[in-house]
Image (cartoon, rainbow, N blue to C red; front, top):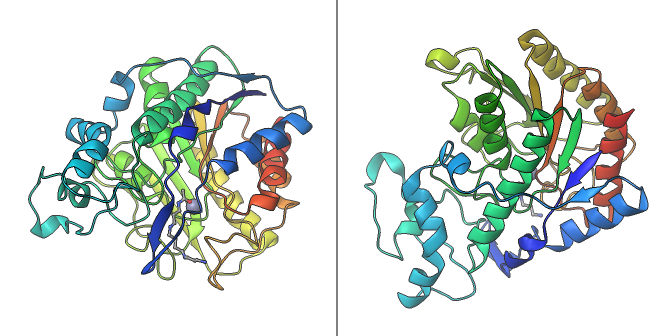
Length: 346
Ligand code: SP5
Ligand code: ZN
């Protein structure tokens, strides 16, 4: 399986995030990619190729222009205006129903951000664009006939909406890849299966009114878990997209067996849609020891389940792009990623 990866992610290395009222060392670290690459190498999964530079045009099909300009320019403007040089983290969040756009460097972060867990540093935009290029390069591989590719994206993407960052995400890599696939293959459709522990609220928002991209997400129920405000089962899509959004929220503590039952439901829905392509938003924070999920309400998946998840997804027999999302249990992350990819290849 071809792996696409870039070192540009190293430029995104904020020192902290503001989580549940505390300023803490950020969980989403460059080390995650180092760990994954080491494990891929030991397992002889590869070759590893560099992304091609696609330019901003395919990113603009998913994200708002004002938002992209914001991401590219805010760090310098923020520092000049007196913001903390460690990272841009908004002190005011614009509740959209009672807010108007605002371009002041200390106000714009609150307009374009939905939480305090997406700190921006000088290299964030370059890293996010490189991650989008990694996903697009993987998409290109499917277009030329590859059955499966792994896009080692960092920063992750599935929480990023059309004009919002949050949850460590700035550009929605999976959405950008899916949009590229359906635009560049005649009459193509694409399913996105999101198996990150957290609901892919950004991806859902981006495709909510579209019928050419089916979004299916298995995640911790928003009734008790981040991102809280979306991810319920009754969100089924709207307008032309009605019926093309499927949320499968799960209780805290689910183990391998219950998870695989939900996975089979997701796969049945995807099989019924019969898409031309599959994009897998692959988060590994479903693992039992994940520190971001763990509040007593994490899932309890074992390392042994990831190959089985891969095998069941592979049984769909669809050209599949695996896009890296979350996963913060550093000691197990490499094995879990390798397990999923090996299962997909069987
Ligand atoms: C891509 C991705 O996985 N983003 C996740 C961002 C989650 N951020 C907030 C999660 C809050 C969960 N509880 C904190 C528990 C600390 N031990
Ligand atoms: Zn997650």
